[in-house]
Image 1 (cartoon, rainbow, N blue to C red):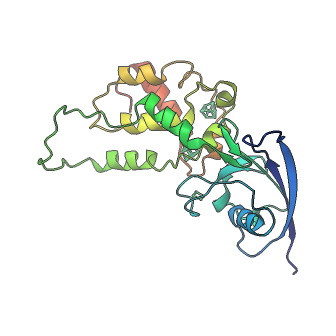
Image 2 (cartoon, rainbow, N blue to C red; image 1 turned 135 degrees about the vertical axis):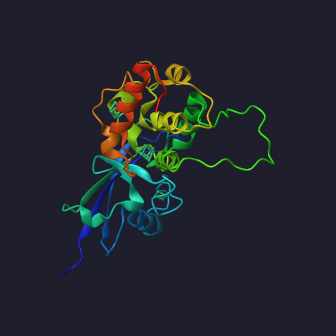
Image 3 (tube, rainbow, N blue to C red; image 1 turned 60 degrees about the vertical axis):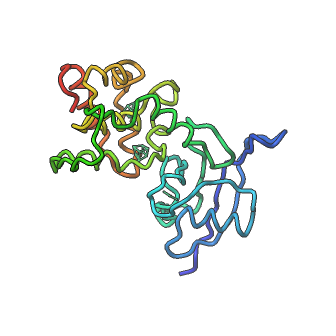
Length: 244
Ligand code: SF4
Ligand code: SF4
Ligand code: FES
């Protein structure tokens, strides 16, 4: 069987270039076995247009840098095989809700850093003066497992791009923020109480502003269970007991 010719419809715009206008450009490329959208973009940049902007670091679904909207779905380019699409036409757009750097490249780093600072996404230790020579205390395996699960987030931004509330209200903390809060609420080494977390996510910009349409759950490439996490955070905040 002869190889397909793929047609990539790619969003182009360089905000740094005076007079540049947002537009879609069309590229053609012969499909090869095992081709991912990331591989295709690299070939397009090497062979057809060296000015094409997109991000990547790991090529293995670990860094979250290559997230973009592929045929209408926010996802990772390095984990998306072109063969999954029956149509040879593939549209590529940058993630909405983030500052555009150029073409398919957005500044998720700036967004994630501001979010981490806003929700205090670092351990607030129960011991104010920890002894560095003390033996590390063992952790309950179930607690360690739950923290590990939340820590699988790669900060790709797909949950934000797929969230209608986040697109309408830029102050909304969104699923990636809820996940950051849950990660520390789960951690028995963190001194913060439910009341402290309530002040971070207990309003319209937090879990009570979420419409529960679960675009986050459907679009998370790491398959984090946002549905269960949001429901649990809400229940626990309303009960006013320990969050998780
Ligand atoms: S469930 Fe909530 S956080 Fe998830 S996409 Fe919908 S509004 Fe956004
Ligand atoms: S929760 Fe999932 S979709 Fe959201 S940033 Fe983390 S890995 Fe990406
Ligand atoms: S390049 Fe790192 S997740 Fe795709």
